[in-house]
Image (tube, rainbow, N blue to C red; front, side, top):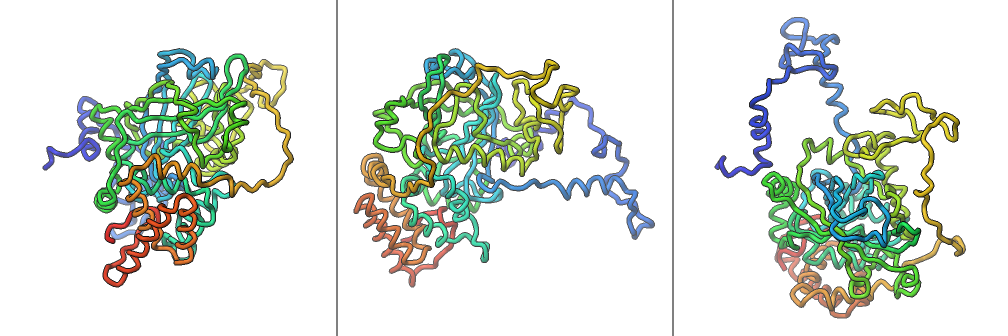
Length: 521
């Protein structure tokens, strides 16, 4: 059986084989002091007690006590890889960012894929959106395009995000996943219908990370060399083709191989089967945005491809596995506010909220100098007036002035990098967007995108999760589905009725609310 082991399973063996010609390292303390014995404590007599002077022990144990950093609140379970982006089509008429400077230009990049709701030790085959975060190390600093495998999201107002995530986590008293929490929120917020329908469709269970698309999801703003702005959405289309798991296969893998997606990506790259994605944009002029039938900055909605076709830009290729997971994946920090000149935020309320939230959480998880970590450090030169802080890893910008303005040839501004001007005139208020047409695009998805078999599986999957919630929540959710299309709500209700009728004849197995479909009806 040993000869059938994959590259991920054989990592230790491969590491040793790659060191055959190298001299074995001398074991040291963290300070580089050689260690003479790593198996036995220094004690007063063979039966102890140990001595405080045993630095080999205290050095090891003190570091061990501090190995863990805070887990990500969302996207905790993930896989990463390194690769490059190559421009294949000219879009300089839309964008002046140097990453798109000319056809053939390549830019190094790192990518992290993830599930959203589960903890770091959870299974990565559960029904859940997948994070699709890309860090481009451009000539003008990092560009972090932090999206998902869906073009939409559950909510459009960032103020709801903490509550939404709480519903995907654990009950504050029982510390268990709670269907009431999830479905109560979803049924009270009908803007979630679009993403829910996508998630409970076949694409809610992607077969690993290589066989799914990626999306920047938000609306962004591109600026060209003439200062002309245009709105934009970013898309990655998998070159491996879309491939999803069946409910049965996903459930089996969740119990037998909970790291399936991580291993699939690692082994593909280790075997030279480098996954790739074709990169596209959609563009919308400011005039078109004014006339668009929906809010063009609404994260719960798409821009129809017939009206705003995909424009090819380039190709993303992943060709190297992380040398060390913690260093290159766990510490990788994405910040949507990292945008080089030529790429700017739109009024998208969710994007605006993330501009603050993401760097804020990184400063909490990793420290004020998280951008000094190699995986996060820009390849472009960094010169500013930030100083000191925990874990400052470089020369702290030496003796350069730490104030601005100054008279001593310290870093100066680059006027051509100034953000574009835009007008803001509306009254400041807390605008309620709860009823901004939450059904039209969902109805199109249900009736025009999905075929009959896919609609049936969607309703079966959704009912399989919804049945765990209280009856009044079920009824409210079904009414929301009927508002999309009567067939949608009626089918889900039929599956709920069937599940209720079988309660006395089947054993109920509890699973994460959004994780699995009905296995036995």
